[in-house]
Length: 379
Image (cartoon, rainbow, N blue to C red):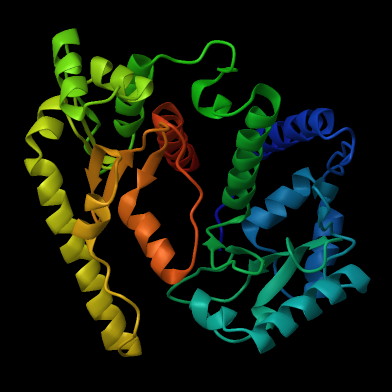
């Protein structure tokens, strides 16, 4: 069973959810109007629901219903069921039939590590959008999930949340991240402001990387280095025989090399000139992908596609070495675009395509966003 969190915690969360709904209404031109949770259920309503179900309600879910007895369109077209819907009526019946059909046609039970019994998943939210977004409270018990866990039905959903509070808290956090971008532009959630009129300097971005990585458990914070001198930058330009990309230059002036597990090792001017770290990266990337290929052959048998040659990929590129990461070599093209040379080559071999990383500044801002999102979800 999921442990109660207290009425105060629920009211705080519901207030935050209402605030996000009001913000959302202002950015989507009223497409999804503001709605509010129903008043809490009475003790008599809760007992009648338990009598109808023939079992006690999960303690945390019971607590929630005592604060909010359902909420129409609480999240887009998804509705949290109230006591009048639980165990009776079309909404309950249709949502129960949906999970039964899903279990019958997919490997969801196996993926979740639970018994293949859809009746152990009690509906707690239905949706006007087909099946996507229906919520279920798990009433069984397994090694992978406890009673009171929450499952959101979706095409690729394989996650059981510990309880309803955790799920709604996460969902509201995700909504807040989205709204920050809508209200203040790209990367606003990470910086807490609209950076379009006054973008952070490269030194500020490097500092943000160090700050964010310091928040991640089991990860060494990004290691900054003193910035390169003008003479060092000029030496690199002379070595390249062409102008160094302005943003790559600004980064090196802010930190002449940088190490982060989220990027790899951003090469210093000395490493670019010397070339030995880049060559090590080529060998390492080749070994990495050869091992992946061996594992693939062992599982699926040999394929006729051309072997990926990292050395050939790098040799045919005019991009300036930027960073070495496990299985990857990042470089800056003459147009300023950061490219994953190995990723691009693999996409070409497999007939696929990957969107570009963006220029150096945009690439680093996206890395900061990724780390911020990760740390925010773990708070």
